[in-house]
Amino acid sequence: MKIFVTGGAGFIGSHVTDALISEGHQVTVYDNLSKGYKEYVNPQAKFICGDLKDKLKLIKSLKGFDGVIHLAAESIISHSLENPEEHLKKNINYAINLLEAMRLNRVNKIVFSSSAAVYGELKNKLAKEEDEKGPLQPYGASKLAVENILASYFHSFNICSVSLRYFNVYGPRDDQLPVTRAVPNWIKCILTGKKIQLYWEGNQTRDYIYVKDLARAHILAIKKCDNLKVFNVGSGKGNKMIEILNTIFKVANKKVEIQNLGERKGDPNVLVADITKIKKQLNWHPTTNLPEGMKETYNFYLNNKKSLERI
Image 1 (tube, rainbow, N blue to C red):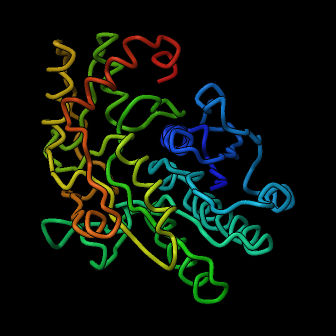
Image 2 (image 1 turned 60 degrees about the vertical axis):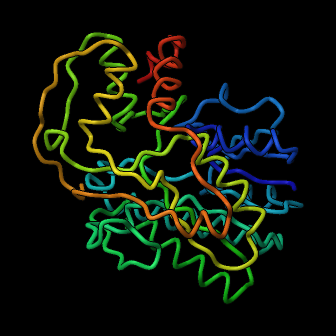
């Protein structure tokens, strides 16, 4: 297939691009490089430096594609709290620009990068796709809004979609600026001997999924994009954040001082995926366990000075 990947120069997008190319697909990456890096774009992919706000460029660029994987978005939760209006407008309006360019070019398949943030505080032990949604911050609200817009484009214009609700993703190349995710920040602290900043004393429970496992889910999703679907993508296992940190300490064979920062707005206490649906319908399951994935991630930054300096 000929696939158009928005945000393909970023952390997750570059791994998705690699996975697509390894399976023989033709890939065009569309990215403004505001958070990604050209060096992470697979050399076998065509690269277009473009912005989702540029409607005419999108329409021109999308001619002749079989499907779209949409990863480009404002993803920093703290930014969504500091400037909610701008955050919501970008994530929602730019998705509409993309869908309109697809509609005009008769491209009728899209895999959307959604988020577990659509759920908010869980009422059950595991998040199921049909559970009640209650985003705790504008970021999660923007993802849920786009899911609903995708539903409208399916029913009105027959544009099929698969929304993948990511849980906590980690792995190599997670150095988009500003770096806010825990794992790359903690790895840098360990490698440079600085204090690690920890919220909630590390007692929150999270579901961590390795980026290459996540990338593989996108390949299966674009192949099965034939109506309107939503899937959780996680490990299906919960770990307290302090357990995640201790795993990194063990991989690094080194510890540094921890500074507890207390509570943080917009954080649910527990967020773990029920992945029964994606296992059954897409035949997907994670293959990388936490120690293996953390070792690969730690070694990436240990051996890539330029990436380490970014975070």
